Length: 169
Image: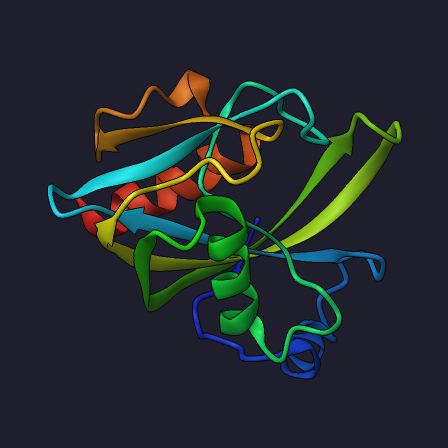
């Protein structure tokens, strides 16, 4: 479910933005996601590995859970980028795209998980994308908008890809 397209910087601002939305559960987690485009305008996806909590072996973008110690959402995303692609790649954050809400099923703990996804656009400038978490990321795949195999995307990535495709086609 799409929520808003104005960037919020930190948790308190997000809580304030959501306070009157009765469709959002109180026990949500926050994830930051980047649609990183390379110099050929391909979107970079990861092929999820067997150790992922859900949607194993599906395509997903770079990003992950915001931690309590993250100063703000952009700092959280920069940390996630480093954790996932290593220090050899330079990915710059550009604009905020959208915030969405979704429920997934955490297969590790056999329970529903509620997520607020904060989605950004970015640019892969140079360097080498490393697989820093080999049990969670099997490979990187790049696709032009309109050529992404939608049936290979995770459910959350399908909704976000539709938004990104509309905005950047």
